[in-house]
Image (cartoon, rainbow over all chains, first blue to last red; front, side):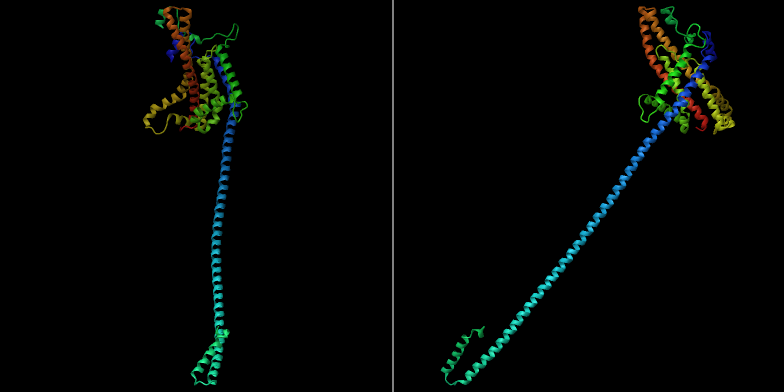
Length: 181
Length: 262
């Protein structure tokens, strides 16, 4: 360095020796720039950059909150929907059960009714039959008594007469339709 | 230089004297030279541009604020945060002022009519380096204690004892004497050499195409012009790189004093 300095000094003033007035001017210039750019302006831009970061982060936070809220609402709706579906399924099942029960009850009722009607009919038939039988029995008794008295009252030696009596009896029978039926 | 002198015997390559400026006008004070004027002008421009960008910052940036924020975020993300971590915001005023001012002063080297990188006068880098040096030492002693600062600097733990005989003086020298010196000289020398190179090639172009136009020298003159254009592009890259590097080293020194372990 000394060699270079001497070499350069040979052609004039050494460029490695600072001029005193340039030191003063340089210090002054740097001080001015430091005060204006460093002390006044840099804090301003730092503040703005910090605010911008905050604004962006705030925006992101807001969006995240909104998304979370939407997610929560969606979950809520889904839960409600699932609940409603379950409720509907339960109601449907209940209705089906009730329907089946009603159908079974109705069928039973109808069968009971049918049975009752059939039984009533049977009873009626039985009663009619009994009545007819009773009537018939009375008629037959009366007819038999009549026939017997006729047979006993007439002379029975004559075969022709006998036949005549019988025929007459039969003819009389035919003449009385209510007795036959 | 010798082959050039054979072609045209009175061609002289520009030397360090091109960095010597007389007072701006007859009767001006001796200190009012072009570099001084440009240093002040540069400081004014930095303030004006920064004012137009950051004076009334909006949440949604527009126009100059976009440009300014790009610069701010570059310094914050590439310089401050890697070396200062959570202290980055606190040191941004210093680092941002440093970066903007050095960058513009360097850039003056390729601005037509100005064409002088302010940092090619070593006094200007020295001012920055001294400021950073004072902050570095002050913070180191404040955060690590007077003994702790020198102990952390000269006796990093985990080395065999005899090594310290060698290491301690080297670390002392490199941290307290060489580092601030190279910090200033790196910026100065790059700007100095860059300006010299540009001056040389443009001088070649001007000399062989205008002053002494000869069939033999014309090719050389064209080469000089082409090289001037190419080196101007390269120089812009170097100007940016040196401003970045100077600010990065500043952040590194400050960070090292705040957190000796890293």
